[in-house]
Amino acid sequence: MAMQHIGSVSGTGSSAIMTLTSVPNTYETLLLRGVGHSTNAASVEAYMRFNSDSGYVYDNLRGGRKDGATFTGNGANGSMNHFAYIPGTDQGSVLAQIEMDIAGYRAAADQPGVCGFFSKSNFMYDGSDNAQMIWTGWYDGSNVDITTISFHLSSGNWGTSSKFDLYGRTGE
Image (tube, rainbow, N blue to C red; front, side, top):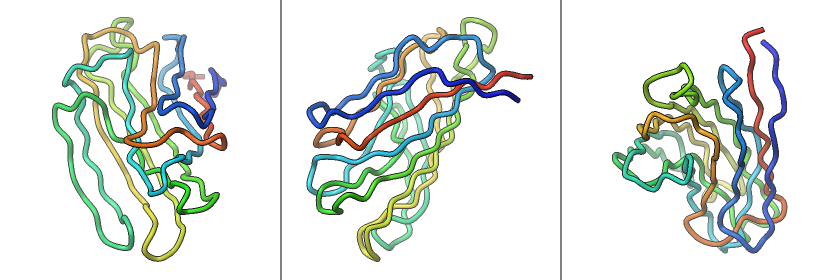
């Protein structure tokens, strides 16, 4: 299986949204890798949206540890999908590490059904300020190819140390 770099997006410190555009429909699956930090004081939730679709077509399940305690939950019929917790300025220069697999993103081309994702994210500041989470979810949009992925924060802006790289996997 070969991997090809599709594109990158970086935080500016002045926007709560980072967007990858022009995602081609020529790959079997997608892989997102990156790091994130927020300008908000406390850690915040990170969400993603496909093709700027703000309809209530996103669902997810999550589990792991947050702030030293077991944490589980789900989100049904949301307008975005959770995919990570991101540290803020109270955590100094700590970065969340994020890795996400995205499958079924070529719905219109030849992968009918829903787009699914599996994400791992973690950061550790101390025993009571941390997150190690696994997320899985799906996007039941309008059966079109995903060409844009935007990443949103619940509060604050993406810090300048934030960067996501998107890769495409071929079947070779």
